[in-house]
Amino acid sequence: MLYPNRKLGLRVELLDKLPNFSSWHRLGIGGEGEVFASSCNSPNGWKDVAVKIFHQPKPTGSFEEQLFALTTPAMIVATNARWANKIYGRNALLELLNTAQEQLENMGIGSDYQLESLQRSYVDFRKINLSGFTTLVRHSFEERGLPIPEELQGSRLLTLPNDYQGGLASYINTLVGYVANRWPVLGFPCRVFPKIPFFGIIDDKVSGPLSDFIGRMFLVMDFVPNSLQKLLLKGYEDHMNRYRGVEDQATILRGIAYYVSQHCPITKLQNVKTMLKVLGSLDICFADLKPENIGLTSSGEIVLLDSGSSIIKGARQDFATVDYLPNEETLLEGRLRNFREEYAKGELTGHPWLDLKAFDTIVTDAVMGGAMATFEASKRAASEKISERQSRLTARALKAVHK
Image (cartoon, rainbow, N blue to C red; front, side):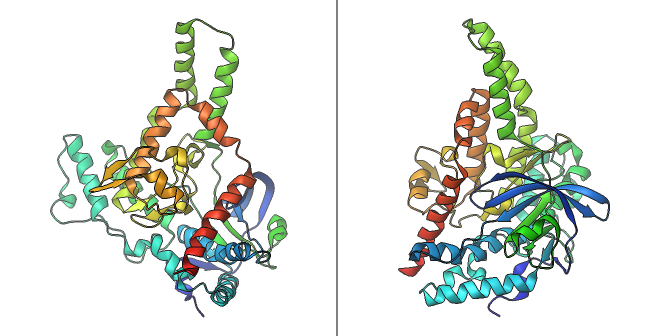
């Protein structure tokens, strides 16, 4: 085996059988795959979930098309398996990865696209140093003029048990949840991500709606009915209808204030900044913050969506939304950087500061009536997103060919 079993998850349970799914409804399609709303039969009864079915292109056509198809499996596993609590179809995943890797090696692509090599860009919570997170909590006390608790003084670190079981999403949620419950005065959110129970590959043992996607990888997470993007678009539409034809400036300003208060939960959005600081304290870059990746649950809680794009600080960032990258040269850690230029050249490396900058841009856009920009961005066809993903991954793989 080229890929040891431990590489498919991080101390997670391996499933022999998937629960039943029903009420299948397609929500949309993006660069990575299609997303469906469904219900999952859990020990506590039926639960609403979202299921992402990843695209799995066939290794046919031109050299570049074959390259993209064969590098896709390892990239999907590297970016997504670590977040889930349980893995299904371990042997089928290994077979798919090994077969693709052998074909890549025959094409002259070496270790750059082995799973273990890719995973160096992504976070393994077994290697996370919690000193940064503990420092963040200490600073939160200091900012509020509160004494630092004894358990955080000196060189003491907040830790989780060594026998922790679960994926990266649950790990981070457990950390912030502990702080939120232990010291509510700090205002930490109770979690950062929705629960991500399953990742795996669909085989011929499954039944129900999943059986239409045999051979493709999937990810299941708790259903999050709204995103900031949806709220902004709805608010923009309502605002335009309510104040269409109005010329009085005071009325228009009142309209903007109404729009912001009703459709952009600015106070709740501050939780996103705390979430990003938590990730940054763990040397994790969310890497593609945008309104569609800020979710709002049915209870009004804010969570971050599409965590697969997250990378470790300093790793190559293959995907970003250019509108939320700084458009000016910036001195960061002693180095003058042009982030949009780096991204265009495929040379962008992640930094937590970029997440905070993207957050500031999102909030500014919302307050200044930037829903129009959100509206325009949302019109991008799924085919464009898929094409962009293919071109960027292919370019990365071609660099490996010419090394």
